[in-house]
Length: 419
Image 1 (cartoon, rainbow, N blue to C red):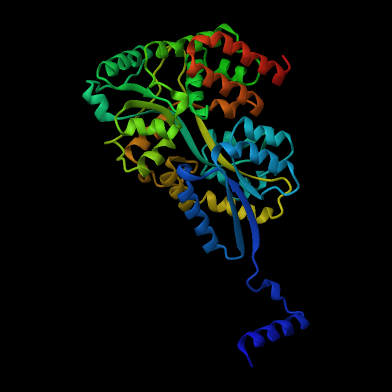
Image 2: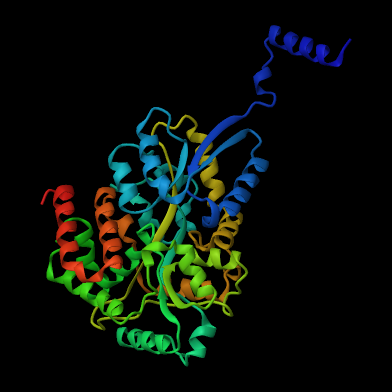
């Protein structure tokens, strides 16, 4: 008898006898959507998912990644339909609040308690998981924002002490320009990299409490506090601190300018380290870190950035599979792969601190010393975020029009928040 024919007859006999053939080699699908593509962690997430597949042959992960910017709109359309992914990556803050309020997410409070995540997730990071007094997001990593600089460029210009105050930052810009180097690179082609400047301008002049009111529509973009923040930002543009044509470059282009010595420093989240490492730079030798300088010494310091996490769709087809994958993501092994591969600070305290480079250890110490606030487009509603991001791009194109830009943005806020 032909071997193939014999196999078919055997399977048929098993079916007739009622023996569960579907369990032989059958796999349950877990559909996942994420924005970890290219330089934002594609290799690391691939390794983590491969490890899960090896450890859980009963599941088949159906992986769908999207570009970072495309994801922002695509995921909202997808989860509003009848076939949402079981699990998807999302940003903690207002964006998770938005989809939570829309009833699109599954509560993960029982999952958190059953796996005793309080033992490994610090209280400050856990805050990013809580919405409407319930848990809807499992944190994956934290990305505080600060300055990443080229030590050789700084030293060649005679700068050996990094700026700690606003006046020192401006003085450093003048010194670097005299040395023939662009002081600061900014790649605002996709708008969001400019948001960190606005975040710090408002938080370090008007304070974090006022900034949170602005994000919630309880303050106005035309307020004197925001005008002062924009005028403070404009001090740097008036000095020529930024490399020209910021809106023509992506964030990786701006990182390249620091890497090749065209520019001295770049304000960005810790994920920039994943990119710098990927192009062969050595932490501590080719690049280093310092926090955003104090503007008003009477205003407490904070840091802005991102908590990335995972959420489960309210009507997920395979919620148990999604939770199995969540547990894998938060495991010590996965957290260490992710922190090193993506250039992040792990959400879990179970990781070995030695995985961090000396530069990332500085960022970790900084994060531990200040209040953490999500970046602008994660702190306000998606419609408001679009208006604000447009304003930042307009400002970098022509800073002189900031008063008009604030009025335009307040019109958006009135529409969003009902002003």
